[in-house]
Image (tube, rainbow, N blue to C red; front, side, top):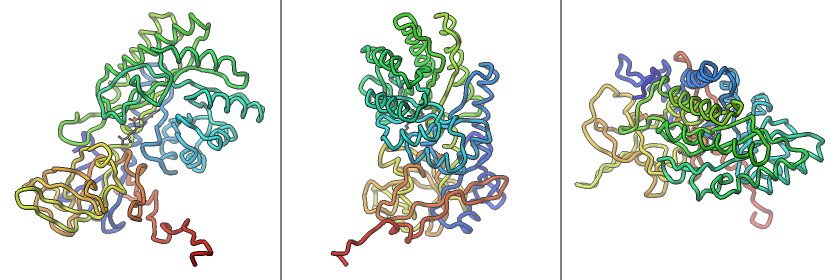
Amino acid sequence: MNARKTLKINQLGHLEIGGADTVELAKQFGTPLYVMDEQYIRDMCRAYSDAIRSDYNGNGLVLYASKAFSCMAVYKIVQSEGCGVDVVSGGELYTALKAGFPAAKMCLHGNNKLQGELELAAESGVGLVVVDSYTELDRLDALCAEKGRKQEILLRINPGVEAHTHRFIQTAKTDSKFGFSIADGTAEKITAYALAKKNLFLKGYHCHIGSQIFEKQSFALAAEKMLAFMADMRGKLGFTATVLNLGGGYGIWYAEGDAKQSIADYTAYLRAVIAAVKENAKNYSLPEPYLLIEPGRSIVGEAGITLYTVGAIKEIPSVKKYVAVDGGMFDNPRYALYQAKYTAILANRADEKPTERVSIAGKCCESGDIVCADVELPAAKEGDVLAVLSTGAYNYSMASNYNRNAVPPVVLVKDGKADYIVKPQTYEDIVRNDVIPERLR
Ligand code: LLP
């Protein structure tokens, strides 16, 4: 189980999250159900912010990467913790604005921002736009000229750090659709181009080396390369960057083999990064930049679990036992996409020892629809409540209506009390945007 107090087994032998009995939650709200522990999210926001305060004189800001889990309530939580947010689409930006999140504390990302997204950002006064193409620089400059405003920007840089993670979630290796490479000189060229834009105010740089990374040295190396680049740009173009955004990517515990991390471990990552920033700023005689970080997964990942009800059980003699649940790749596509590993627990019999190895199958019409492969469980029976752990990040945010299944609701628990933060989708919601043209009626 996770390294903190979110999850425990109560006297009834039931799994508890944030003081709420998961069996009761399943009864009250039905399954499949995403459950998020509010305190966990708050603790993580505070831990990162505290490290910036204590080790960097508060000269920076934590931007929660909301692609990990976006809904109005989560923007409220991170806002009340004093964080900013990273938004990566018009939809995330709109959701944050709807929740009353101050646009000035938002940072807009995207490798192909649409005109409408740039317009919404400019109109709402988004604090920073991280520019990732020439097209975007030109469009944003023209848009700002039209609106008579100046937009602060960062440039997305590829420092060429290859971190050890799944290749689809690595983002700063040489062959990447993201960023401008330092190594091939394109990062310098875009800097010169951006500095010439009248309506854009280049503040500095951004990089993000990938996701689910455990090695502190990869982050420190990225920081080192970014400061070396900043020094180079000061020398070559006379431009001194004052903002450095080092992205997110800190890994979390999913299953056996992953490090179980305490809050202190997470802040240790950040402290190592801060130390590298300080040391390199000193070596290059650069002013210490205002530091932004964008953790997503590590803030919400272990805060969340998904509850399912066990249905069909099928044993293929001497091959495998499948335990099917009422969810699947429509609520969690991460096994299908990345062969992601998860830990499953029978929530209503959480005190029983595992006796068999099974695969948890979803209910979609697709053989690859597995929620977790090869997990140890006590013999599951129809009607058992099954909890999959560490589903708070990139599950709800990557859910779909595949097979016209409804996206499960999300409840937020705090001190044993649970409230919807995303209501259940109904069949009516599923057909809401369907239209039958006249000729088919
Ligand atoms: N900043 C930028 C620019 C990013 O691209 C990302 C993640 C983050 C911050 C947050 O990274 P985190 O702290 O969450 O690792 N769907 C994949 C993950 C894709 C991550 C994309 N970018 C998954 O389910 O593992």
